[in-house]
Image (cartoon, rainbow, N blue to C red; front, side, top):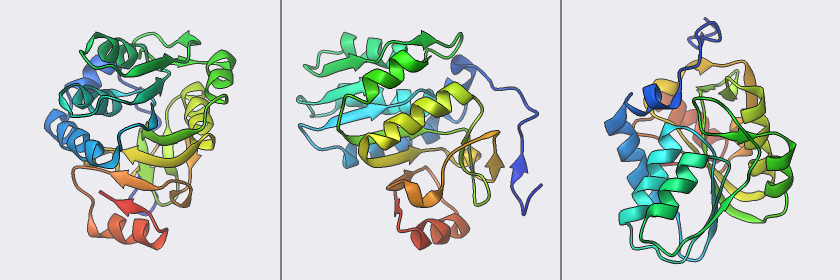
Length: 201
């Protein structure tokens, strides 16, 4: 425990399907808020995870038609390709992580670096003042950093269970992202985010 933040690196990372069914209503709330951030005609990016997946799924029933979407995540790309939308989908390629659908490695990073992305939507495993936005997996963290470096704006998507939790790998400080989208943000975190000029959704 570090000032109330649980250092939970000893707990194993759970796979996509287990995460998908956890806090589902909260993730659906986040997905609806994401639709309010996107503008027609933008190039947007999604990293992996159940929360970003639900945000991508929400695009199927949205009014958007003209979006370019880049992702390193096979199930997000597949879901959007199967929708009736005329979105342009770019899958980075790379080496998929078993059980997680996310591609990582130098191939994916090279592809991401070719794009000037308007908005990047990033799922995270932990959020805390000490650990910033953190991840379990090193290769996944590297992909997130690459997306972040190529994006004009980065929004962290996190349900309230991710707060006060530190994972092994820090991806970004609070000041390095544009905003945080969550089902519930406590007064403590709202104040911290506003101190760092973050949008709170």
